[in-house]
Image (cartoon, rainbow, N blue to C red):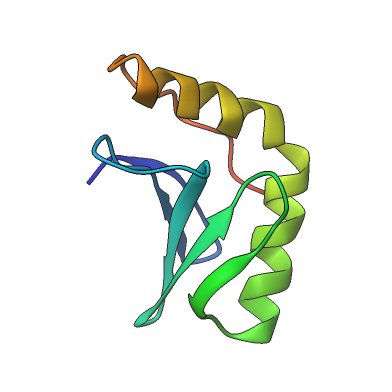
Length: 85
């Protein structure tokens, strides 16, 4: 499970055998959700405060996330993405 970032106890993952649309997985204190990169749609449950933090991080790193998705499609190595500070 390739972890690409970690901040405030939130872990962000992208997987190689995935399906469109481009998305990433986030885990936090037993919660897990899938975030679509382009429109921010979420599937799963996440605490409101942690959700706000993930959206803030996603807005800052949307291009890097989409680049990683291209890496997945090309079966290339994923890049780590800076945490939210």
